[in-house]
Amino acid sequence: MPSQTEIFQKVSATLVDALNVEPDEITPASTLQGDLKAESIDFLDIVFRLEREFGIKIPRNELFPESIFQGDPEFVQNGKVTQKGLDELRQKMPFADLSKFEKNPEVSAISDLFTVDMITKYIAGKLNGAPAR
Amino acid sequence: MRWIWIDRFVKFEPRKSARALKNLSLAEDYFEQHLPGYPIMPACFILEGLAQTGGILVGEANDFKEKVVLAKITSARFEREAVAGEVLIYDTEMVTLRPEGASIAGKVYAFPAGSDIPGELSAPPMAEAEIFFAHLDQSRSQQIFGDHNFVFSGELKHLLGLAKVTAQRTDSAKQ
Image (cartoon, rainbow over all chains, first blue to last red; front, top):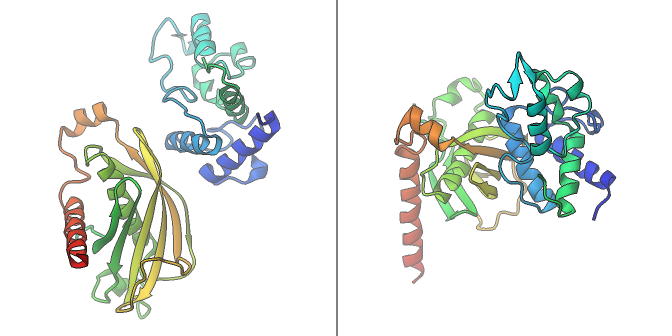
């Protein structure tokens, strides 16, 4: 079982290849879309590469869920994620760090949950055999 | 202008690899402008030929039922130019094949026209690229485009048909 640091290094190398960024641009806190300028199609490419790199299967919508709330008013009200929505996020993305997001849960900030650290935690969980959700 | 950037397939292993050939003739339109007095093939056309070779490899894997679109060229490296009078070999290998899409690793080799092209390509490639294809979402593209597969409409598939004929001829010549 590789250490968290080893996983981070491999994830980092994967992102260098997929997004054409410099290694020193990548930190655990880097957001994929904001900091590393990933576009929607890059997410699929990243999933393919992680599967190859770590020899794991990543089911569709598990690491990067698409349209999590689909405009459901129970989950989103006035542009903010409701408590029920936060619970849903926690359940769907247990590997994401919601501590900062839940203080001001603007829907538009959901993409900031997709960080390098989130991928690292997801992979660690997978390698541990823990169910991802 | 016909948007076909390969002349024929020379090898095709379903779901694994495909190799196609492209003759560069000075009669091709683009050489007049690119560049005047110095006819080199634009790098983007080389990538298009490589993507067509790999795209057919990806399309064939699902019997051309998926709409395969070029989603991104993750990396591309060119070591030298390709000039009129050369033959390009597009060599592609399937790296990932999934329901959502596929990626291929491609290499381009250049030979002088008329030279013997070895079956094993050991010379350094003139260009290398990694190409990522997406399968258009089945239900969504059905709504927009109907059943018609606009990607593999005719000419591209026809090329593969020619490849099969070539393969059969090669097999019967061996017997």
